[in-house]
Length: 157
Image (cartoon, rainbow, N blue to C red; front, side, top):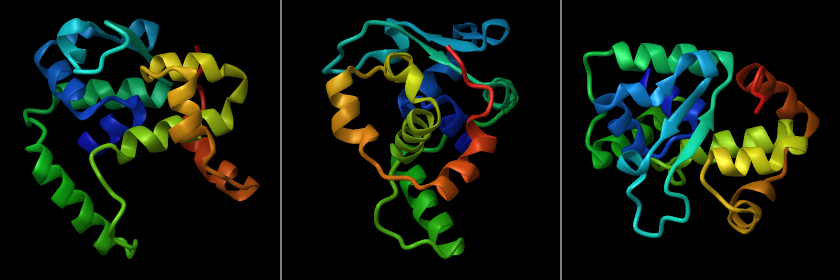
């Protein structure tokens, strides 16, 4: 559930931890999370607040995450979990990090909804230059796009 909450929201690890402590930032009726300055608190902050847009699956996942009696593990523990899960799934270990779910989500959204590029970037707390440099250039083919469809379906600003 924790992994899916990170994936479907594209949240930073620390933001999801803070959402657990301040669940009123989650607005299920509006399909979004309103991260305020309490949640973001990033050194190189460009945006003091942002609204993370969720798809219907994301709403259900965040509801379930907030109902868990469990906190996210320490950041280093999460990194170890990702490596262990990668090995168990037969995936080459080496590129996974706590930021992997966030990067994956933004890349998938951009590939599937390029017409909403600015909305995606803002929802993820990026400007166009950061997004172009780190997220948009990842090549996906039609088969990739078909596989990601079930995950991103229903996302709209």
